[in-house]
Structures are given as structure tokens and as C-alpha cells.
Image (cartoon, rainbow, N blue to C red; front, side):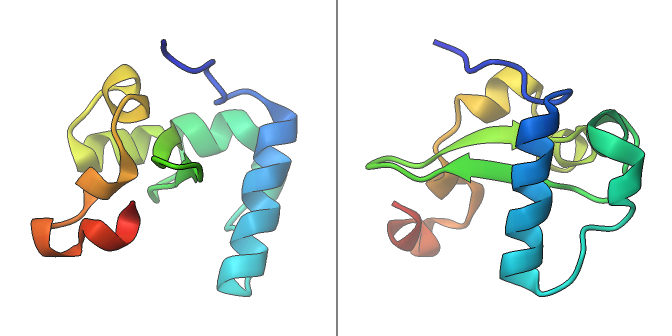
Length: 93
């Protein structure tokens, strides 16, 4: 079952920007432009995963979709381990 489209969700956007700050140590570029800009217009790829027993992508902006060459539905149904080369997949779950 596909996950909900989180692209316009302001709560999810806050989670993305906060996790980026925590993990990278810098602010996500242009957070003041909001979730619609990040999803549809940001010139950089941004993806998010849900960490469970089998992690899956739950978000990928349009730039990430172009980079992965997959649609929204294809990306959010992909286990995150498949986003890396075969020798590195085990560490991704």
C-alpha cells in the first residue's frame, strides 16, 4: 500500500529540516521557501526513509526522483537498501 504524499506536509517538512540539521550540522538550504518548494523546485535531491525492520523510502523530492530515475510511487515502494551498490546493501537493512 503506497504511503501518503508527504510533499506538502508542513509537519513532515519540519521533521526533514530538523533531521538534516542534526545529521549534517547545517541548515537545509532555503527552508523559508517551504515544503512545496523543497518538493518541486529545490535544485538538490532530498530523500527520507522510515527506519523499521526493513527501511523504506517515504519521501523523495522531484530532483531525487530524477536522479534515481523513478516516480514517486516507485521510490516509496523501494527498500532503501536497494539505493546502494550490492556490496553495501547489507548495512542498509
